Image 1 (tube, one colour):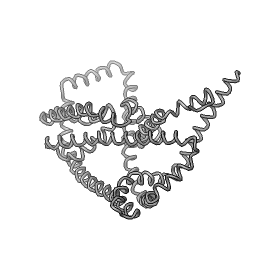
Image 2 (cartoon, one colour):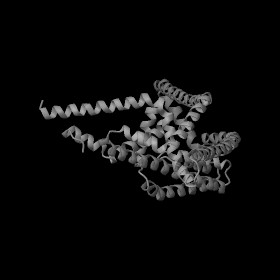
Image 3 (cartoon, one colour):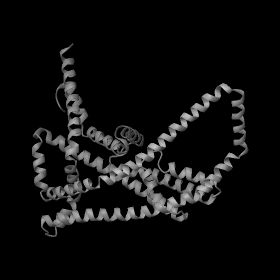
Image 4 (cartoon, one colour):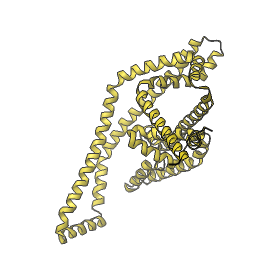
Length: 371
């Protein structure tokens, strides 16, 4: 093998080995250090408020304490109000579902009595009669399909309740982690400049500029992406809640919040909820609600098309197709948490690309020098 090619192959293997080792180290150390990472993120978030309070000549420890109290207390207050309202409306919504059970049963019976449906059933019966050999095969396939669907539904329900049980059982450990995070954030924030200087000193001098560029790109990309998604979800939820209130729908807050979360899914979005609901309203004769839901869906669709490019343009977002692929891959690899991790990993890779990391690695493999 040519000497130049051999050197490139060896450098490429070294880069792959270093990348795999880094990923393994992150995978192994993350469960141990994630409270410290959360504490650093919290300290980073409260730092602007700490600087403002320090401008009023407050002691550093008092400025940090008030900032933590404001952020944590405000978050708990908002979450408590949201959860309380959501639980109340979910109870009402479940009661509404119970009231509509008879209506749904009558709708299914009326559909089954339809002449066209009856004609199809008669044709199926005639096919069974004329082809007795296919009867057992079709019944077996139907039984297998029904069993598969039933198992999927059972696993979904069981998984949901298991998740709730795990969350309840993990509350003591979550409380302990929160205490560690808050205390660590306090100490990090009181010595913010000193701790950052120590971190900067750990990085070799030739790598400080590239690392600073990568960090800046990551900060803009991650916070920009999360901020953009939060803005778009909030706008969708607010429009849905207002629209449902105007239509006189019960539990508008719970439904609007749920639809806002569903809007995380690109291409599917609110249509996966509003369109079937509108069709059902038309089928049950509630034309006013059906028309209202159709108009509401159109308003959300137009608003998203107008605002999404502008909101994402102010941050480092992702193409919707790339985000959908990232969410699917993340869900396959990490479960439901992957719906969030997938796009975040894509944003991180995009930030590395913008910082020139991949270009530098390619240059190293080809020429042995970082550019």
